[in-house]
Amino acid sequence: MVELKDFRIFSDLKGKELDKLQEAVRKINYGRGEIIFQEGAPAFGFYLIFEGMVKLVKRSMRAKSQILKIVGPGETIGETTLFDKGSHNAYAKTLEPVTVGFIERGDFFYFLERHPKTIFRMYEKLSQELKAFQNKLAERSYSSSKERLARLILHLGKSGVELSRAELAEMAGVSSKTAIRTLSELESRGIIAIESRRIKILREEYLQKIVEPFSTTLNPSLII
Amino acid sequence: MVELKDFRIFSDLKGKELDKLQEAVRKINYGRGEIIFQEGAPAFGFYLIFEGMVKLVKRSMRAKSQILKIVGPGETIGETTLFDKGSHNAYAKTLEPVTVGFIERGDFFYFLERHPKTIFRMYEKLSQELKAFQNKLAERSYSSSKERLARLILHLGKSGVELSRAELAEMAGVSSKTAIRTLSELESRGIIAIESRRIKILREEYLQKIVEPFSTTLNPSLII
DNA sequence: TTAGGGATGGTTGAGCTGAAGGACTTCCGT
DNA sequence: ACGGAAGTCCTTCAGCTCAACCATCCCTAA
Image (cartoon, rainbow over all chains, first blue to last red; front, top):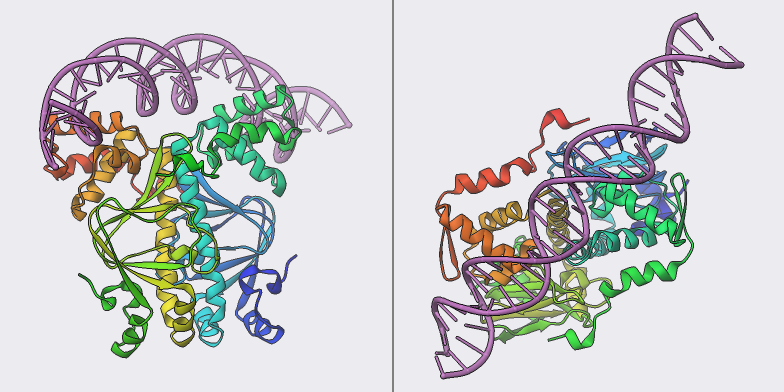
């Protein structure tokens, strides 16, 4: 179980400041598969994840959903609602038993007024997140389902999260059938090994090769 | 030409504070079609747009590009590089003659230390932007090219920006042929009127109808 | 304890189709 | 009158949908 000091956004707070912050944190436990907040629900603060993995998902009218991201200990959810007093843009569902810390908006403002440097770290985090989504959006235009899945496997490979085929599909933005087919193909070619939900990367070079042609590394000759 | 006080992120600064900030701003003029910063180029600060429209674009190795957004007076570009000292994630190109104000990172930090409340407004802005991109990403998974184009037309209709077919395509994430075909179809059905690059919406209801089925309004019956 | 029966998740094949791409022509501004 | 943008037509194919089937896991009742 991580502590407040392990959150990157609080990395430059000292012991006493962390203690002050601690007072504003209310810990809540969830079982596996529980909803932390619903899409469209009014937001009153944000959440620190102390333990367990959580998925952030946007639902569509049709059956399809898009998993925006999967976050774990040391990360936050709902932090985009801090200032606009609006509602949650996606729903958050636990992938396993989870412990979060909830901080009410007002309490956090009170803290921020005294320790404004914290918001700088949060701005930095948000910037990175924004860039990540800009990249994902562009990736959707450029690359095929196979490439997106390969990139996803490379990305998840390190984190060790275990997801269902449907969840992988909802992350990569493909149908579950396509995800299944692609995974089977990669397995039969000896590039990955699958044991139920655990995907092991056997030949990273091959995955890289699938991904490479569209990597963000810019080909100088293409710069106008 | 807008002034500093017209920028939403500076909306709660007073006259004297704005004057102080003004000192850090260096104005630069660009002609139509010029690059303000290149994708991958190191970033030294950020830009305020005082006049003219600018497109932010990510390029892929293939011919395809993705227009991330189109911004105009009162908005900023490059503000995601403020804290991470990295490089630009996309390139910025003017759509018409443009006047920007460049603020060097160091100068802005100096200002922020004295006026920390500004960063709150900027965080708010960034949050909204992040949500917008999350929504766009989800939209890519859900909706057909026709729906995305319809939504884009509705969105641009109000702003009055004039774009080429290729640019419309690069915003919606479709091929230029598809964009052309869809526009022609909408025009022949009397839903929009096109005179060269100016798109006029004749029957908004019809566009809404194309878009509706996937609107972000949540169908309560779908909430688990 | 074991056998049935859901429910959930995974797999596979076949066919369809939306949208991309290529090749050309036409239009229009400079 | 030239070059780039816009438009048209036709072909092709990636990936979705439909449909059927299998594998697990968990619950309940005999």
